[in-house]
Amino acid sequence: YKMKGSFAPLLLMGICCVLLCISGVVDAQARSGIRFQRRVVDCTGTQKSVTDSQLAMYSLGLVNETINFDTLLLYSTVAGNGVDLAEFLNTVQQLAPVVNNASASPTVDSVNLVWNETWIELGSKLEMEGSTYTADGDTISAASAMHRAVQYYQLAGRFASDLRAPDTLAVYKRSVTLFESIVKVRNPMFPYCEPLRIPYERSWLHGYWCPASVERSDKKKPTIVTVNGYDGTAEIQYYTIATAMVQRGYNVLIFEGPGQGYTVRFNNLTFLYDYEQPVKAVVDYLLDHYAPKQADPKLLFLWGESFGGYLAPRAFAYETRFRGLVANGGVNDFYQSVLCNLSPQARELYYSNTPANDSLLNGYIERMLPYSFSLNFGMQYGFLGFGVSKATDLFDAMESYYMGDAMSRLTNRDIFIYDPAFDVLMGNQSQIFRAHLPSPVGRHTTIVSLDPYRGTGLHCAVGSTANINIAIARWLQILL
Image 1 (cartoon, rainbow, N blue to C red):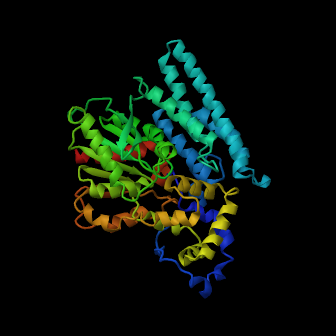
Image 2 (cartoon, rainbow, N blue to C red):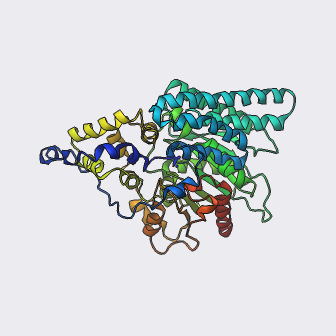
């Protein structure tokens, strides 16, 4: 994963097999109807060589890579007490026969029906138990039950064929409403956070202010601002980032910008390539409300995850109030990462940019959506986040999401780049990002790969929250 998280290479699994047989469809007659020039990307060296046995180390027993990865993302919240290990795994094992039953030719909707009901049922039980514990005055047990309910509600509907369907939106809102109600109650087991509505244009951005839970020995008051990805949520980042960093004496401001989470679902704000705009609004809000008493304005750090590995560096390039940047991992050209995971024939159709070939490509994708979880996941989150409804419109919308001239503004800026060894989602984008950084780079700029055989090999080190947070925290300490 967002990504996440995530989208780019999964399109290959859905459409390559169909489009391999139509290489001759783009002929001279079709080319005569070109409407405008689409950006052509070089796919040389963009992919990582990863074996099935290497990916199998990260399997939860779900044969579909998309479902396995995003379930592992929610599983990662165990580090912040977001899930209970055996409870979570037992539920996954109950669902595995449904997900893995290829002989029955399951559709996305048929699997989702069982998937959603199972997680909603478990979340409802925990929410009810939490209410009982609260009535009994047992606030610790209540918090434990309700925090787990939040994550199970988030996992329900995650693979929906329509992310704006009323029932899907209802369970999503239920998870956020429950989380907001419990995270603002001080509890020794879970860090306190203040739910935020950050003014942005004529609307607002969903987020949380999570103050440091301990005073640092050096008395400093650093603050991390997190930038989510393609499909991640602020609530997930609470368990994977905030819980770890507030215990190290950092304030953490989590927010969902345009295109993300609650902000896009209920405020209808879609992605924009110049993400410095919403980030500026967040920093202005932070300084107006929390500096200097709680947050040192000279000790601000930006942390981007997955697709946020493009959004955060782009914002960092124009927002000089940040002292350092974490790119987990770095993304130089998101559009490139998407197109290079299409088959060559699919790219040729797209590049031709004729009404006939767009219709052909969109038609194939639309017919395969009900049967490919990977394709459905990538497309549905793209349609939601970018505010489009056709595959070619989605690719067009992504074209501007590359660092380009913004790279020139990163001279002498300190950046931590994580490059996972087995990242099949973004491939070698972290290395490409590092190669494009202008000289001189920041004194403490570094690109890091951790031991994938200790769980850190997947996109964003999903599944190994503790290890990646240690590496980032130790780097941040250098900048303090």
